[in-house]
Image (cartoon, rainbow, N blue to C red):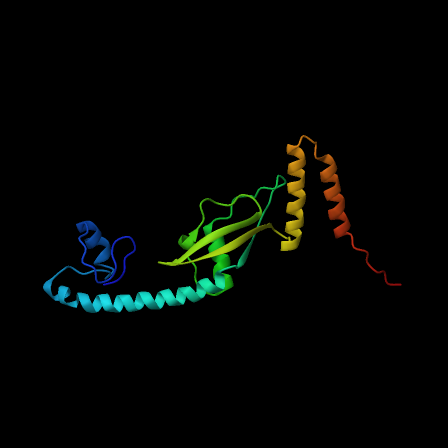
Amino acid sequence: LEDVAGTADAGEIKEVKNGFARNYLLPKHLAAPATPDQLQRVKAIEKAAQANRLKFSQEWATVAETMTGLNAVVEARVGPSGRLFGAVTGRHIADELTEATGRKIDHHQILLGEAIHEPGDYPVGIRLYREVSAQVVVSVIPEGYTLEEAAALRAVVDEERAAFEAGETGEAVVAEAVTEEAAVEETPETEEA
């Protein structure tokens, strides 16, 4: 009667295990036993299901167009080593995309190989509906930073990491970064007389 992901589309005649039919498909009215009456309804059910699939496909295609090229910003707590406390998962990304698009995005639709453990920009695929998908960029930034400040901080950390790998101690780079951050934070204020 309805599409069931991984099993069958509406209107298909499919043999399934008794327990699956009895405990899941029949109580939720997703399928019906293949009686002579139901077999006569197959064509009508199949036609209605194709119309529904086409409608959903078009709706999700418009959402995919708005999502393509979108930069989703996720703030996360970062430790002194530059790694995140915890991780950014598909749930976090789905919440940000739901907020950005106004359309409910399920975390199962996010195609993220593994959780994100470091700040940075990551390309992430989203499977919206059957053949409709989109590609977005997820920017993971430390809490309390703007996107530009996080990019500057990331450049300093990358510079420090490269210096460390080259054999330098990295103290000069760290001191320079601390001086730059202090200069940014200490903006001259005008005093009132």
